[in-house]
Length: 168
Length: 273
Image (cartoon, rainbow over all chains, first blue to last red):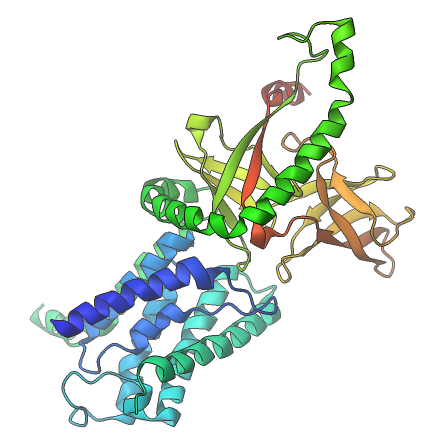
């Protein structure tokens, strides 16, 4: 129960932060952070596949509704969720983790958490930016925007991990 | 049959994934600019109210700046009136005292959501059909052009920003009336591109670009921006001009919706051609 409430709060906070603040950020003309994916990154290891997909879709859809972008966030977030179980399996076998454990910098260690986030955030951002532009003629520019945004999103994710989860 | 169900059950993760992606893509395809309004209308009630609350809150932080802009605009308007008191000698000021019927009506509105970061950007205004705002009306701010209304519900309207692939606006040089068309090619939200201006025209950095008045939407002479840079491609007969927008689209608060009262008449004239 306690962890459910925490998930709901995290969902609401991340969506509001995204649509009210981060959607308006354009650092250096290129970089838009999409921090809301952090919600999917931090779902517990033990979550079942269908719940992971449904939550990802719902998260993306909510951001879409607020940004009037049709379904591009939903499509990108669900695509990202598809890769999460296999990526988690690379690091851990099923017996390894404690019940209710979630991916975090503290739990996985800096190197693994960074790799895990890098792969998922990259999948999400590349899909999202391609869908948003929806044409190939501006591919180079879109790719550059995506790369820079991936870096910025990752930076914010790592900072947020240090702020909220790594306590000595 | 049972094997099929077993197969689906064993791979339900991938089937669910495919299903959700199909739904997402259906949403994307159904949301191209002109069909998007159906979706917008139904969800606007919720998102509109969230953005209204947020915009109200944000307003307080911009009060000083907004006041300055309004004061400057008031001064400009006073200047444009040209000693209104002298008119009383000729004719008392009344309902019919304007010599010609006016072509444009201005409706003030507040921006409650706005983006500049996407390839195709839109704004939401807090005025809708109830206030006389409808689609195909121009939107300007006191600093220059903003966009075009593409849909309106009763209380809100949805504006295609200048920062949008689908927006093309006819602009002209203020000093000698040569005209070209203005687009935004992504990237920096402070600059756009003016093309189709013939190469024999003399240009200088800082020249002013205003709306030409050739469209049925924008009145003539609304500020677009100033020339930041220009060049002619090899073997080309037209300039490619980098225009610095006069409006900072990231900092929009109050705008005017411009209603062209003679639009119907203008369209009917064109139809007869």
